[in-house]
Length: 537
Image 1 (cartoon, rainbow, N blue to C red):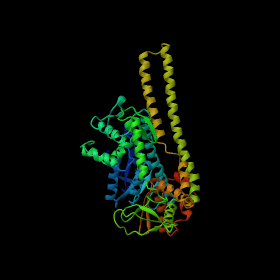
Image 2: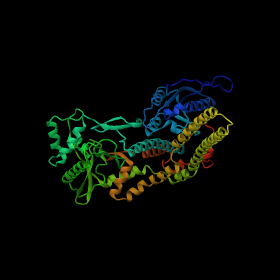
Image 3: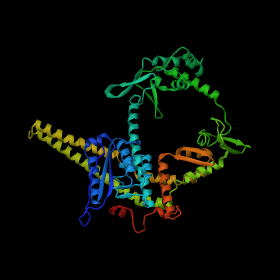
Image 4: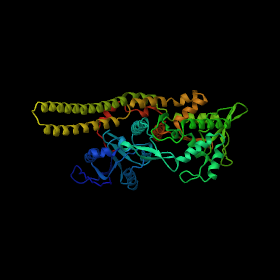
């Protein structure tokens, strides 16, 4: 939907036009199905317009998106950002229904956070601005994390559908070389044999299964014969991937399990198994036996040239890491393992949440979440009760028809109308269930464990430290004695929230790590804060 301009000019108390704050409205639905329902976008805009009017705001622009937004790049979301940057001097306020309508990933959050904005989350009765308390910013970060969890739930539903397809014997992804995708029975996409490439796949398996070829020799031979796949010559890496793929036997691997496929096999299972044994034997002969398994080898990149760091034992007891130098001589000096351990422990320390904050989250916030869950459960209960009421009426009408009190024509017409309403109710129930995020107590458990990550890290063996870092750290680079890291999204959200809170408190003269700064005022609780009317800050 295009952006829409709408101006609401408030009047001052003395009846003259007052200089009002300009705002933009943002509304979003996450699927085309919700748009067809015809209520979500209009309901959001109606709520936001009423809120703007009651607070004396001038609506400069309205932006709406109707699309799935697991990844950033929503059309009108991007236009809204461009508008706010262009007119930042006179418009720096966003009105949105709630957190998960605005953010769908970490990039959206960071992008908005870098702009000096004030965000009104109308249904949540919260205003987030650069002047907000640390506790408010922290809670906002938690809600962004929960919105991200909802997006991941949608992904899980997609994976579930693909798994069901695999159970039915249909390969649930793009066809590999040798096959092509086509429309199958019941409108489902299946894979069928590619008459141009399939014979070549069979030939590759047949030749390698004789045991007379290495990969390089096989590739050299077929290229010399002018054989190609999809118009391209072959490379050893491509042929290796082909020879490892079980799909060509008629079976296929998907999400850690093996399924019996309904597609036509290109090689026998016996031939494929023979090829695997030959590949495994050659790989075992080429494997170099390493005396020491260095914990951080392959985890850290060199900040100068981008090569990986590898471990090396000195004097039989000291472990040093250095750049592989695969791209030429590198200026980065050797680094002791103890230094890397200390640096990674400090990174994990940035995820620590004060105990007092965890206790607060476990009481007030958990209670609020339980209230929201109860409200959703009550809404589902009402929809189900209406569904059952309609079903009872249909059954009563059916008895009346049997007794001759109503005609068949009347029964068919009325029952069709009622069943249509039942279908609508059932859709709303399913949408409510799908939109329900994971209970916040699960997030709290994760936060409690994350807060102990640094402590546990220092107590673990090198191998266990490596496994922990693989879960938390997405990228790590070492340059000039300093470690730079990017964490996987949930942990990066938490670190960003912590850093912002510490920075804000330091600017105000605090220590930046005083536990009390995270907590609400002593004379207030979460419920009362949520009930207070919003005011412009």
